[in-house]
Structures are given as C-alpha cells and as structure tokens.
Image (cartoon, rainbow, N blue to C red):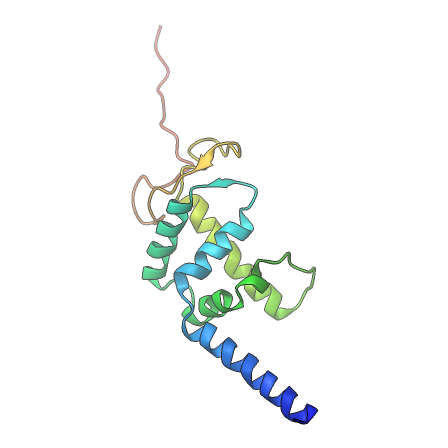
Length: 146
C-alpha cells in the first residue's frame, strides 16, 4: 500500500469517527462536561449536575449544534485551555459562562454564603421570572421597638 492511500484512509477514518461522535453526542453530556471543567474547584454533587444538565437540555436555551460539538470533542475539551483570543475561543467561553452562571444560580451555593468548602447541591433550574427564586434575596427583619 502506498503512503498516500494510507494517509487518505487514516484521514477518512478520523473524519468518520468525528462524525459518529458528533451524531451520537448529547446535550446533557456537554453541559455536564462544562460544569465539571469550569467549576473544578468546587465540590459538586454528580447526581445534581446530571439533573441540571437534563433540565437545561430540555429548555433548548443553548444551541444543540454547539453542545454536540463540545460533547464530540470529549477529551480534547476537558484539557486545560490555551490562552488565545479569537472568535471561536470567545464564543466557546461565552457559552461556558452562561452554563456555569445558570448552574450556580440553580444551586444552594449562594444561599450558603458562597462557601467553597461545602458540597454544592442542585435545587431546581433558575428562572428569573419566578418569584422568590433570587438566591441573593434575604428576608427583611424589622427592627424591634423598645
């Protein structure tokens, strides 16, 4: 076999594998990868992260194609990011920030005073339109009259 045919068949195999990973990628897997990567310094409840990924994927708030691509990249995505400033990197970082912000607002992290030593538990998907869902809200205690 000639070297050219070997290289062409290897390239075709790599593209085929990438297409299969993309076709069978899931939104939930990508969301969970993002949360675990960006919040690696916190103690996260794995079952809560999976439930959050399931709830967020049902809303279709983030592009399915972008999430599938993230899940298809798999091990390459979880590697430490190189410091680059280009449009693709900025788009990926923007999507990551949206997911992690929504995850933190959906957990007890802020209700527990942003304590990084405690395990972060998922409560329910944050919705700004629902009353009393603001994790920063504190009850007003009226002053006592003496």
